[in-house]
Image 1 (cartoon, rainbow, N blue to C red):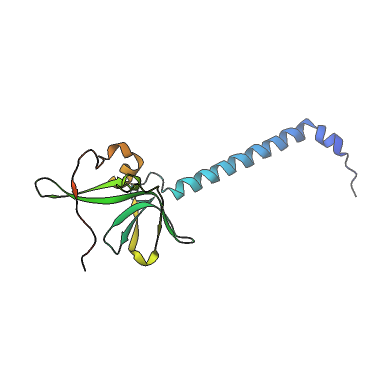
Image 2: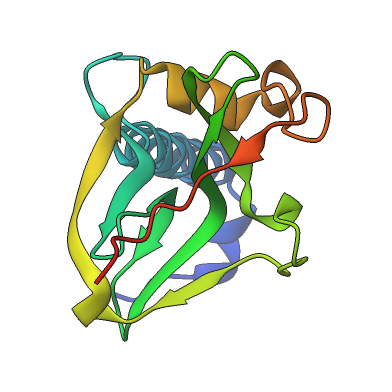
Amino acid sequence: MLNINHKKMFKSKKFAFFFFLIVVVVLIIVGILIGLMVVSSHGGSDPNAPSPYTAVYMTSGDIYFGKLSTFPHLRLTDVWYLERSTAQNGQPQVGIAPFTSAFWGPVGDIDINSQSVLFYAPIKNGSQLVQAFENPSSVQQAAQAPAQVTSSTPSK
């Protein structure tokens, strides 16, 4: 068995430099891996890559947009909804609005009954919707341009 004097080894300038170099390399590798994971989860800057946003089409005809999680149940966060209205000249208009701006004052997130969902689909990074979600000041609020909201619920 080798008899190594640990005190001399730890005091050695070469060992300290080598240990420091290993720690720095490991930290750089961990930083690169975390950066790659973040970029890949957000699709990077590729406009055709999926964004973190999803369109959820309900059986009622309503369409909601947001960040969808599916476990343990369907939940939308950062929610927007498709708002249909009629202009004064009778022409139909479509816009989006933050869910929290609905007239009845919802708080924010939506827990969704999965049986009420017709389908859901991811939205591309380069879409105008994603640009509006990330820059809400670019969206004209419904309150600024009053219009009559038409029902999207099919009649029975």
